[in-house]
Image (cartoon, rainbow, N blue to C red; front, side, top):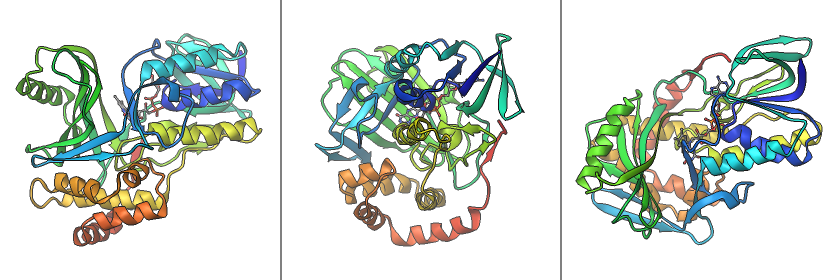
Amino acid sequence: MTHFDIALIGFGAATMSLAVRLASDYPGRVAVIEPRELPSDDRTWCGWRLADHPFTDQAAQTWSAWAVSHGGRELVCRSDHIPYEMLRASAVQARALDAVASRPDWQFFSRQTLQTATYEKAHWRLSLSSGATITADCVMDSRPPGIGLDRPWLWQSFVGRELVGPDLPATGPVRLMDFIDDDAPLLTFVYELPISDGRRLIELTRFAPQRPSLAELGTSLDRLLDARGLATHTIDREESSHLPMAPIPPTSRSGWMRVGTAGGSMRPATGYAFHGIQRWADACARSLIAGNNASPPSRSRWMDWLDGVFLESLWAGGNADAPGARFHRLFECTPPESMARFLMSRPRLGDIGHVLRALPMLPMLGAAGRYSIRRRRPVTLDQP
Ligand SMILES: Cc1cc2nc3c(=O)[nH]c(=O)nc-3n(C[C@H](O)[C@H](O)[C@H](O)COP(=O)(O)OP(=O)(O)OC[C@H]3O[C@@H](n4cnc5c(N)ncnc54)[C@H](O)[C@@H]3O)c2cc1C
């Protein structure tokens, strides 16, 4: 039986980000257990790059303008200092696989899942689907847990198609939210990345109390593409998921830690996680390289509170297009760089002032009152 200092369960955004930082300086042995055959181009990671990270060179595209549209009005925001970037999962995986391969003392258990884990004599004994058994002092588990959510938290569900064909110019901003008037609670919008000339990612996204069927969302997206004359374009790649828009509580016990989305790295009100994961991976790698324990993901409590109040205000509804109008006003009244820092969970004091001034006072006060009553309701998680 082989012993490791750390076992990484899953090789996704969080564990890959940690592995690339550990590969050069961490003296310990690391095992990686991943069920898929990599690379797999199943998603793109986008967000505002506030600081360089080990995958900066891997960015497939960056943009200096982004737009929010509602009721036929398009608002374009710009920054020459904070780019919105897109990274392909396959490029990030290639970099991370190279990092693991550079360490002959590490082991990659490809196409294997964790079957059982038992804690004995200060280490974890892990049995894998291949029949192999390993032990590890510390386990970092990025497997997606089963999650139950209650108001005000939401599911962000989306289906995206990367299209290739004519009439898809690379010019124009990233369309973050182009709101659609439909009957679905609570809001639906199109997200659009003009990746290059003749190539565009178009996603239909819904924030909803219950997870809608992805097949049904895909059919709505196809109708939309048809209406835009894009139905016959080649679909090069698809991505879809349900993301929990909720403050996932950290789980850490006896050397077992949930990381990434499973450990609470996702920002509740946005679904952005990749850049927060980079900050966690920096801190965690520093701690491990210095000979200390791994540090768990962390979020700011007051931002969780603000996110809860904001999402609660969306539930209250009012007129059908209120959520779209609220997002539009938020982007309109907040300077673009303040908004980017705020959405990436790194606001300066002045940024927070801008965001608070852009939110409608009375609906937010009402939502704060309702949220303070509701917020003790837990987000439920399966045990690892
Ligand atoms: C399609 C999609 C697009 C997204 N786009 C963005 C974006 O643009 N910007 C952003 O900030 N966030 C985005 N997110 C949200 C978030 O950043 C990602 O979900 C991110 O990958 C989360 O990282 P993670 O490490 O927590 O989980 P993952 O990257 O999902 O990694 C989990 C790993 O666990 C493995 N695993 C699963 N089951 C087992 C098992 N039984 N045993 C061992 N391993 C297992 C999986 O194979 C995977 O490698 C997106 C999510 C999805 C699904």
